Length: 327
Image 1: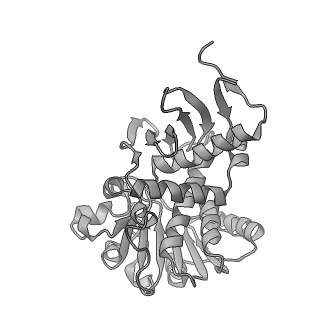
Image 2: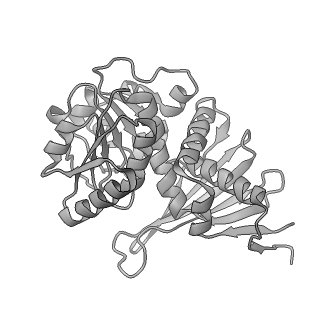
């Protein structure tokens, strides 16, 4: 049957779970590490209330290309602040194979990237996960880390909005059957952490180097634009830093401010995650190392998850909505 498949958010979520996303994202990082992909820089369209970002990618071994469009409008109240769509293409013809919701894919792939990094970089005996920020991404981050570090038995959550932290704690307790505590401060959560995930929009550091104990792994998720920073610059100089993609991270990731300050040099960054996934670099080298994964979010991650969704829905044989460009 010809035509472009149309998939809404519920159909996307029915076709991919976190374990499948982890597998897909790790494989695309491996291909990235082997330089078997194309990923031009994301394009920002500045709008009155925020921006729209276009994120293209192509992986020949995967057999697909994609472009994701996603908006960031933090002031939205009556409509969502983030909505994404993704078009999956057939490379030989350029024809669109599917147009699908990418809001759920964005949550899943961001969590999965942190999960892959945690698998390679966190201590195997980690038992405490702490989260700074309890927004829409937080539950997916928990799910990904628990999938790769099942010995984690306690989660600590801090958010400036205590009610939001409470909602996350209740949801995580119900879904994952782990002990979840609400921290009274960022410091309390950080000092307890074996794995620390930061997911905030802050432009001023909120995690101080002196609070982070040896052996901690940090997933720094929040910094996604120039000037944004969650970790004290001093912390980046004493840690082993792994980025998702060097150029993107140095311009808009957690390391962008320390680099602009001259506190950090690009040569101080240990590796891209793809280098580790491909076996060109080792993950954790020492039990006492502090490791940081600087996650900016790659179009390749979206492509990997979307390709999995497409293959699964086509293989299912279910009746699918289609749009035919030839009619």
